[in-house]
Amino acid sequence: MSKNAILTVSGLKKTFATPQGVVRAVDGISFSMGAGATFALVGESGSGKSTAAYTVAGAYRPDEGDILFRGQSIAALRVRPHLLKKEIRMVFQDPGSSLNPRRSVRQILDLPIKLHDDLSRTKRAERVTELIRLVELAANLASRYPHGLSGGQKQRVAIARALATNPSLVILDEPTSSLDVSVQAKIVKLLQELQEKFRPAYLFITHDIVLMRNVASEVGVMYMGKLCEKASTKDFFENTIHPYTRMLMSSIPVISEVEELLIPKQLVPKGEIPSPIDVPPGCSFHSRCPMRMDICTQVDPVMVEIEENHVTRCHLYQGAKGASSSE
Image (cartoon, rainbow, N blue to C red):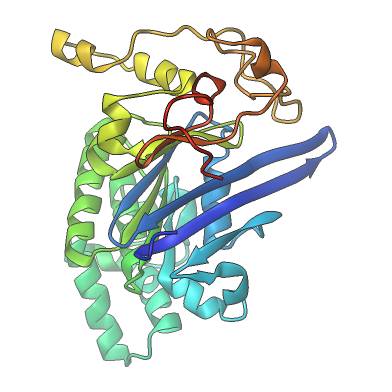
């Protein structure tokens, strides 16, 4: 664990029982992130990235593993949930459903300040006005209700609400996926500017691997509840290793020869994504992997370090020079 880590996730597991069987939504993932940094969890729908985020936020209790916030176990901090809710805030995927339709923008932003900070009504009103300005909303929108706002305006309110308590960590769960393309870039730019100004760490959950090149300092790719590759953003895009990650990268649309040189040779996956209640034995990706070996169907690979801060979970690299178990 880095001494400067604000969040450290170690061997995190979360399962859900269903009538059809047990879903291993998060299956032993580990990562850490520093103050003011952006760590991106990327993956297809059902990969477990949002469950990981909600578990970090305290919405779910982990089955195994630990989550350390500023070096303290979040499980231990449950006796002080007020501190956790002040320091770790969340921006949800759908701003329309995450905002109370019966409260005005002013009331929505005032509530977390009232709950977590000992300020007078006048000081709270000043803070609300400041938040509205920070997220670049018109002042006259303070009296409006969510139904009177556009999708982009709602997400700006959601971001302002998350920042209302001056948190150290903001979890962004697909914050742009429900917005028009023209609005997405503006929201991403706003998030970057706010991070530069206030230095919160971002745990960014997304399926958009291209977006991460511009916003994340480190990227982790999830598949069927497991991390299959994790690296700094620079290394990730320059030296993609895992077959699944290479498959994702090779599917990125390009419009120039220069861009085409930056993506790996195309890998075509086999078959369909398995059911989460019937994960294949061995490597969970083996049923789709075009580079599958016999061992892949029998043994689940461990995470190994290929080079500094670049790790992968794949049998192709288990015997690589310099590779060593990181778990």
